[in-house]
Image (cartoon, rainbow, N blue to C red; front, side, top):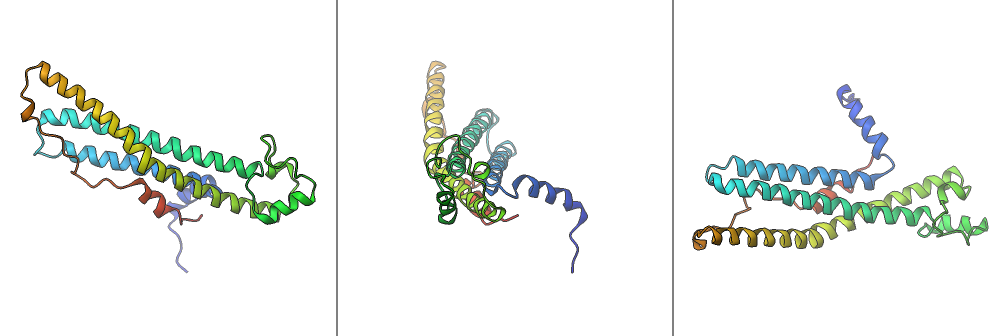
Length: 212
């Protein structure tokens, strides 16, 4: 049986310790890393492209960095928000598998289920088997919530916010050009097709099947 390279052991331990029971958090963090790498590749493509004038690079690089900030902040805020809400629904007992719900009803805890100060993991006196089943259920809910959050962020919220910011910057730039008596007709709209920007859904979709 082949042995695992010893140099990977610390990394494997880190992943297991931080993400072993929280796959949803892993999806969010890998998504953020994906956005950072995508932005870095885009900036490097602009910087090292000799066909782009230096003056245009001075505009494109800050704009790309600003776009990256909007993308990352939007992605993290929305996906983390969706995951937090889903986790709270499970912990409070508002969202439970049928088997665990039956246990709570049998213990006479029906009135406490769904309340803000109730924690089904700590306050229900569940058996280790039931807790393990509940943890597995929670992990699935977290992954689903994080995936929904990433779709909302990447396909709805982020494009709208980014376009609004880009339009505002473009308007300011045109105004400055007019004030400087620059020929507006000679301005060439920046081309952002230097590298293919991956969708963040690609990152979350490809990593949603990972298991620790």
